[in-house]
Length: 168
Image (tube, rainbow, N blue to C red; front, side, top):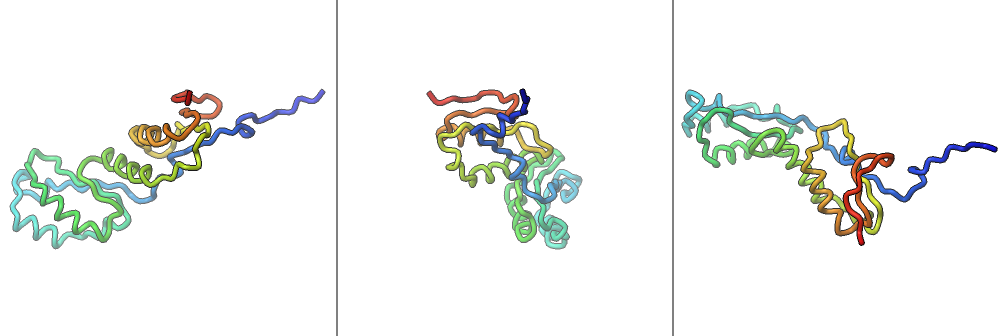
């Protein structure tokens, strides 16, 4: 009698989606404009525009940029819009907010563009453990996109998946 080890996971019809596979390369950076303001509180238009004009924007080439102001200043929307015009030729993406908001925004774009039609009527596992910073919101967005199509949806690893949805 031989005891062959059979990999039932590899032989199953489970489809695995790993959001880490879609993680875009490029440095994530925060551009805090508080130092561009008079006493870190007041935006003086002329000086602000001059600073933007003279700033080295090339340093953000192939980066994902989160614009922010860490002081209690009230910054008008046009100021961030102006900076985004300078960043546009260099940055992969520019948002207003934190690095977490930036990562969520990146994944919103990825999931929106993701073709999920190959998963129609299949049992799908969304891989849970990742080495890259995948925002929790990305898992929710992917779940929402897959649910109308899939036969069943799980989260985790094939050996210990948590069931999320099963079509009746």
